[in-house]
Image (cartoon, rainbow, N blue to C red):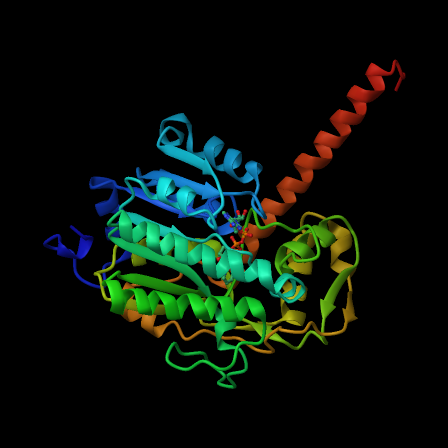
Length: 372
Ligand code: NAD
C-alpha cells in the first residue's frame, strides 16, 4: 500500500505527515551511492525515521568516513537496520543482491561531475547509463514499488529560459548532462514498456555537510569553504556572474522521501531547487562573511578568476511549482540557512582535523622522545 492509499492522508501530503506515516509503517529502502554526499544524507534521514536501508556503493567518489559518520550519529539501534553491500552498479549481480527485500529504490550512484565527464565520457556513460539500466532491471525483477532517481539541472543545457520548467529542455552541454537525459528517456521507456513507475528528480546545485571539497572535480561550495577556512586562494571559473539555484541537501532529502511515498504516476520529473538564484560573486561574499565568524582572515579574502569551464551552464534557476503542487515539496532551508549550517559543519571539521594533527604531532614528538 502506498501512503496516499491510507485514508486521511491528503495528496500532496505535507512532509511531516509523510514522515509520521513512514514511522508507523517502516519499509526497506535501497540507496545506491549511499557513501556519497547526498546518499549519506538519505541514509541518515531514513534510519532516523525508523526505516531499514540497504546501501550499495563502490567508493568511486564516496567514502567510508561518510558511512561511519552517519552510523555514529544515528546510534547503534538505528545502525543495526543498515545493510551495506560494497559493489558496482555496472554489475547486475550486485544490483540484484542489493535490491532484495527493498520496496523503494533511491538511486543516487553516478559519476557526478561535468569536467570529469568531459575527460572520461566512456566511464561516465557506463556508470550513469549502463549502471542505471541495471538498477532499473533489478528493481523490475524484485517488484519494487517505487523508484526515485537522481537526474540533474544539467539536462536544461542551452535552454535560454530564465526559469527552468520541467516541460522544456535544451541541448545537453556535456557528456554528464547527456547521460542524465538518457536516464530520463529510459525511465519513461520502462514505464511504457514494462509498467515500471519512477520519479526523476532534477537536482539543482546541491550543497551541505559531507560534500567532498577535495580534488579537481569538487563542487564550488565545499571547495571555497575549505580554502577560506585554511586561508588559501579561492578560484572562480569565469567572471563570477554565472548564477545558480543552490539547494541545501535537507531539501533534496525531503524531495526523495516525498517522491518515494507519492502515488504511482507513471514516470514523473520534478525540479528540486530553492526557486532562487545568486551569482558566484554573491555566493563568495556570503561564504566569506559567514566563515569570518570562525576564521577572521576570511573577511579580506578575494577571488582569482580563471577561464570558464566547458560544459558549464551560464544561469540556472528552478521553477519548483510542479514539485510543490504534486509532491507537497516545501524547501525547509533557504540559501541563507543552508549556508549557515554548512559553514558550521566545515568549520567544526576543520577544527577537529587541526586538533587531530596537533595530537598526532604531539604523539609523534613524544614517541621520538622529543621534549616540547
Ligand atoms: P557523490 O559523488 O558524493 O556520490 C555518488 C556516489 O555514487 C558515491 O558514493 C560513489 O562512490 C557512488 N558510485 C559511483 N559510481 C558507482 C558505481 N559504479 N557503483 C556503485 N556506486 C558508485 O555525488 P552526489 O553529489 O552525492 O550526487 C548524487 C547523485 O545526485 C548523482 O547521481 C548526481 O549525478 C546527482 N546530482 C548531484 C548534484 C549535486 O549538486 N551534488 C546535482 C545534480 C545531480
